[in-house]
Image 1 (spheres, rainbow, N blue to C red):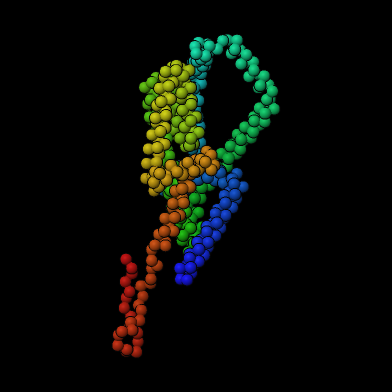
Image 2 (cartoon, one colour; image 1 turned 135 degrees about the vertical axis):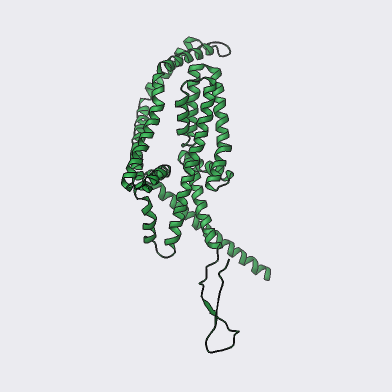
Length: 379
């Protein structure tokens, strides 16, 4: 009878815990859905926060040397735009200056591909190539409607990207200008203990985001140096633009690395031939494997306080749930969750501080007044 009672009690407790977990999961699903509906506003906000963590050290230096907050924010924003434009110029100008050589290399590469396809084991004749080209042209003509739709969709995506960029830059300016006043304002708005807890978590989260951006920049610099060095040894042209492109694309997980690697291999192919292209491909794959499995987890685990395995799992989960954006935000989101959890654990593990006052002592002789002794604070 006693065992049956214990079993029923255990089942009832398990059912109650399961119900509470289901409620938590339901609320999490609702929160994710709400975030999805507000994504057009949240995404520029996220980009602005990441850009602010990257540019805040310069703004803080200017403010500490007597610059007005608005002037410091304006100067830093303009400098950021100049650096971004300079990066684009650094990539575009050398490519444009060698566009003739690249075009000739592309023509040679296509001719080499046709010569190779014409020989064994494929033995594709020129008539077969022409027939395949004609079939391709007919399919393109039959798919004009789909192409127009895809083009309009692409134009809409570009416009949305421009709007997001402009909004993120304006938000970055306001964060640089008014950021230090946010936590005091938040403290005044919240009641009770929340006035202490929420600003503390927000400050720690800000430091964590800064660590993420710095670690990502360091990893991108490693990629750019090693890949650029490999391209220089092989003798591929446009080494500096390719290195800069590798550094910039490191901030975009998966797709950025694939795009930068594809461009490097393509330039090696059209300028140096198949052998050097394969060597460049091997160099890029080796560096990317070292970066993704060694450098990035090690650097980010130190800067964010997360284990390397946790970072790998977070990137995998974020990519499977939300694609490129999920991969980009997986590590900072995991780090912010760790910040909240560590703060909650600190608050739950630390005993409450008792006031340093006296308490009545009952084992003393009764003199008409209660005697008091100081109570030491817990260590």
